Length: 177
Image (cartoon, rainbow, N blue to C red; front, side, top):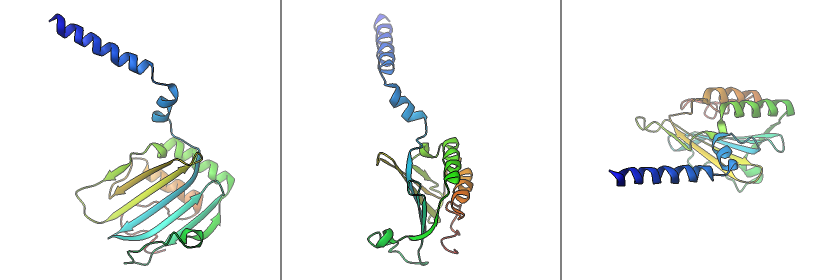
């Protein structure tokens, strides 16, 4: 009995000592969203074909898009001028700030890396890549499943760009722009 008590006490001390030595910066990185976003890439696909891609460049205040032809499995050619995107519009400072506030409130940069509904095949696949000002990246992917704050971010992207950048399901603006 003494061995079990001693082992439990020892393990508790190790756990608390390890937690006490965790730098505050690391804890904040886990629980606080990052808002030093330079760029956001969004990609939608269905039936193994890219339907639409968007590049939101918050640093340079520009919005770019690409709509793939239905059934085209090659996708956007990133080696082309402007990475194969077509310039859509310049972004307004006020809308960028509103977008970042909503992204912060929604915890967008804290979304899990994967959202998958394994009960559905094909359907809507999507990915978001966030590039931060220090050049680090966060990639988020999904297949017929979405984060809890997805709908709120759908609205935020629309308010920022005037386009339906995020959507639910297969039929979206990439197929019918």
